[in-house]
Length: 452
Image 1 (cartoon, one colour):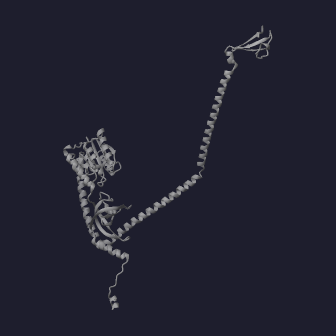
Image 2: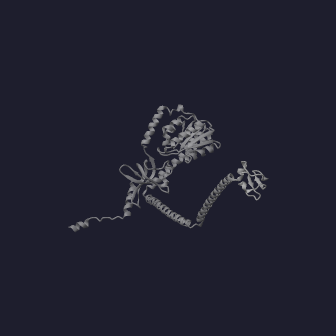
């Protein structure tokens, strides 16, 4: 009976890992071809190929995401850790690691949190004080001769503004005041720049611009002290901060708000020709038509790609792209390690060669010889100085003890005919010849008398 029951049981199917992964991949790709997921970005890692890998998480779960470079066209921001995003795409499996992940088609940011609340509170306060009133805003000059530009000297915004101004007005007098446009010190530098142009009267209009970014990146333009400095400027200020959808406190306080830095440059020169405006309008219309057409074609391609006949090749291509990114990263690490090892060997060899370099030893001996020569010269000079001082001292003593000094005081030296000095009257007789030496000259006399 037991044997019969055992034979009636259905045969269990055994999968390989690849087969099971493929079944899971097909199941996910079939049921999750166009979904939208909300969460917070973490572990964001851009690859050298331009693809972006990150994790989307909430308080209970997380899922890996891949944002290929081809899907990033038209994106006005870069994904970063901590951003809350709405992700649209499809789910599949990366078979090399058996992980399911979202292949991202587009990203949209969600709420901003504490900074957004602070922005709204400051906006309400300044609006109540009347800093946003149109009545207090100054008109732009029709044809400004001097334009002041406040922005980062290394960003894309300064290049766009300079390109537009020089193209439309080749002889424009443009003064750039370089500042930092994000970070803790940016607000202070922006205030210094605004004060400079007002104190020096160095411009007819001021452009305050920077490129787009998150609310954290643009926060320097939401500072209360920056807003009050803009409001107190005697020179009209045009604010061109971020993209078209970005709004800052500086935009509301400025005399004119431009949607982008490029638009700010256009506003300064909008009185040039109406033809330029007409051409710009035609360009905007054409861009809208092209964008609409691209959207239609993209939707059609997406529909075709979701069909079963296209899913497998597309999955394989995405798997190979991701695998290529991994191999590229490993190769780069290996090359850097090899380069560092070669650099250390080269440094060690150079040090060994330097230790046997006779030029170094000759230089050391030359330095020792120069030092010995210098020391010998000092010793010889010291010896000569001592001998000269002793000679001068002996000369003074000799001069003090010289008989001539005695003669100078009125004394004389008497000698007999043989030249012997006479010290006693008994050395000569009456009639002997005596010579007398004076300080100047000699006398010759004869002894006439002697007394004791």
